[in-house]
Image (tube, rainbow over the protein chains, first blue to last red):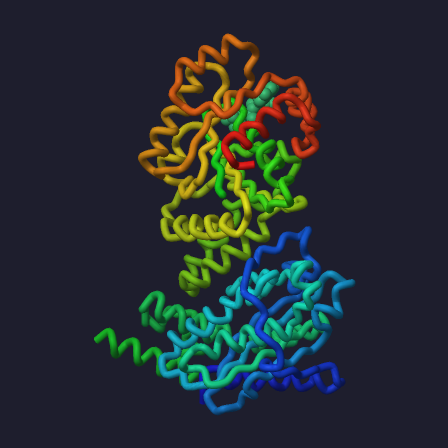
Length: 238
Length: 247
Ligand SMILES: Nc1ncnc2c1ncn2[C@@H]1O[C@H](COP(=O)(O)OP(=O)(O)OP(=O)(O)O)[C@@H](O)[C@H]1O
Ligand SMILES: [Mg+2]
């Protein structure tokens, strides 16, 4: 069992049901050249498309598996791509990054992968994240949209970025832009994944193992991997 | 390029900031970040922009996140980026950020450090940043304002106001270091005043801004300085920026 197995299963089920109507398209990350890195400041005036604006549904999720259950380089798009939505000006947005590998030091791995997700820096694409709310707010600049910036480029950049890490063997990305409802269907696995991450973060940030008073006692006691992390940490304190 | 507008209270810092910000934002579509660092506010009104949230609101939210103890430094800094982006009021290629009034004076040094880093990072992504500083030397003294490329010192024609900017320049030299600095003398009425100041200060005077009815009228009618027509004060402030190599 890996840390996020349960959440990953749920995400897969939700995505499958969304794709059932034929709404999902799949692309390969290697099929195009990587988009240039560059300025990520996009002012309202220069914005061709917003995705996940604070006033619409938005979600960012990072999960891993350790059993090889990730199709390396696959980018799945449920809903319109950038070029198909320019008229609307705004889209709801979910980004799910799923990696597979061996994550012996869960906390370090999580932070490495998370930082790699934060570090795409594509020219003309501003991405802002509010980790505690799991939201993601993107602006595609006019220049970038004119040059054809697509979610496939973002997906490819994310996959490239996380795969630079030693512990990551394969990676795939799913974007959902079809509707606010579809985005919200991922809320439950995302919230539950966040509780795991928060529990792990708290263990490391506070190095406090007074489990009686900890708000994460429930997940910590039931999720094997968190138990492992906790005992690793308490051992190292002795 | 980060420009800080400093001086004694009431000499015209906000007026100069607003006109400078507009001039910079107009220049070949430069993207300008305009920061009202005066807790008393005023620049928003001068620009006709009403921010929904201030940096202090953002700070409060981040302090809550710190208290919860679930976020490490990187998460806090991306959160700040998000919240500050939400707090920006944009008009054309200008983005306005108001510092607001700090309420709780608890010590959150960690937050202040990340906050400063984030704002500096944000400023770095704009072509130009204009900071309307709090009156006096406190913000320079406490290094609230640092990594400034140019100190735009503003005084009126009073000897007191000139002494204040000399002190600011002094403190800045010691606290911040080798940035450029120039003095704009505001509300000048006649030749004699110019001669008096010229012989009395070693500061590099980059502009003489006349007392101007248009400024007074705009101020009285609470009109946005972004709509200010060409007038002698506006021309003089723009001239000062050119002289300083900023425009
Ligand atoms: N050149 C000018 N001609 C006429 N009036 C001016 C001129 N410059 C500034 N004023 C007026 O002087 C007053 C003070 O100016 P301003 O608010 O810009 O000063 P300040 O230094 O920002 O003040 P504070 O320290 O209170 O923030 C305002 O009413 C403004 O309209
Ligand atoms: Mg002022």
